[in-house]
Image (cartoon, rainbow, N blue to C red; front, side, top):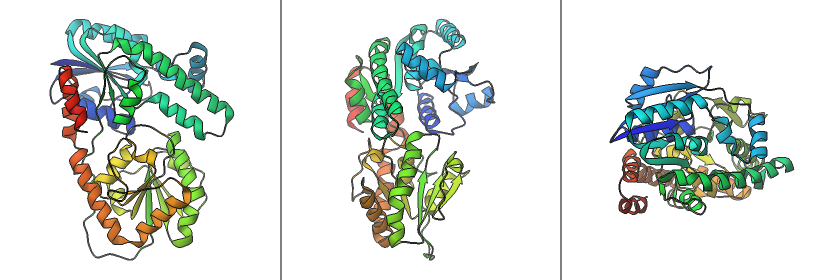
Length: 403
C-alpha cells in the first residue's frame, strides 16, 4: 500500500503532544505501507530532511516553508469569515501545489491528514482511494469547555463562537474524507454527532520500556514530592497549575508541610508562582526519570479533551496518581483500582494526603496502573487500529471494541 501523509509540523523530534500523536501514527504507517510525508515548517526552524525521513520511516520527506499569520490576526479573520482559526493559520498555496503534484505522480492508495482541522482544506488537492483525517480530539467540545472556566467575558464569547464555527466547518468539510480518526471513544462519539462519515478510535500509546517504574530499594526518608508534567503554553495546563497551587496545595501543606510540587515541562519557568513549596524544573532532558522520583503524580486538569499523554506516561511509570475526571477522560481506568479521582479542591487534597500517608496503597495503585498501561496502551494497539482503518468497514467494529 502507498500513502501520502500531510502534517502541519514535522513529527520529529518529538517535543510536544501534537508531535507525540503524529509521530506514533506515522511510525505505525511504516509497519504496513510505503509513504511520503509533506509538512509545513516555519522559516526559522531547522529541519534535517534526511534524518527526519529516517526517523519516521518515510520514503521521502518534503518540507514547505510557511509563515503563519499572528494568532490575533488569524483569530479576527476567523470571526469575520466563519472559518476555524487553525485552517487560516496553516493555509499555504505552496503546500497545496506540492500535495497536488505528489498525488498526481504517485496515485496513492491512502492520504492521511494530520493536524486536525488545520489541514482539511487540502483534501480536494489529493488524488487517493481513501482520505483519512486525524481529528485527534473534538476541538469544538474543547472550546466549549474552555468557555466554562475563563473569567474574561470576551474570551468566553470567542471560545463559544469558535465551537460553532468548527462544527459548521467540519460538517461541510467531512464529506471530502473517507474516515475520521479520534483519540478516544468519547471524542469519537462527540464528533459523530455532526460529521457525515465514520469516526474511528485510534488511541495514543506509551513506550512501556522507557516509562517504567523505579526499582524498589530501601526507602530513604524525604519530604513528599508531587509531580505535574505539561507544556505551559497550553491553557489547560496553565489553568490546572494555577487552580492546584491556589486551591489544593494549601490543604495538602496543612497535613504535609514539607510537601513540594515539581513542575516539569517547557514554559513552566515563566509561571509567576511565588511559593517555596513549588519547584519549577522546566524542560527535562530525561522526562521518564522525573516520573520515577515522585511520590504522587497529580493531574488537576479542569478543561481539555482527548487522552492526556501525561496520564499514559504516569500509568506506565507505575505512579500513584490523583486526577480529575477530565484528566482520565477516554481511559478505562477506575477510581480505587488504578488511581484516585477527585474534582473538588478539598477532595483532591484529601486524596493526595491519603496516598502520602499510605505507602501500601501507593504501591498497589502503581502496580495496577502499570499493568493497565502494558495491556491497553501498547504500540501494537495503535498499529492494529490504524491498519483496520485501511480495511473494509466490517473490520472497524472489532477495532473499536477492543479499546
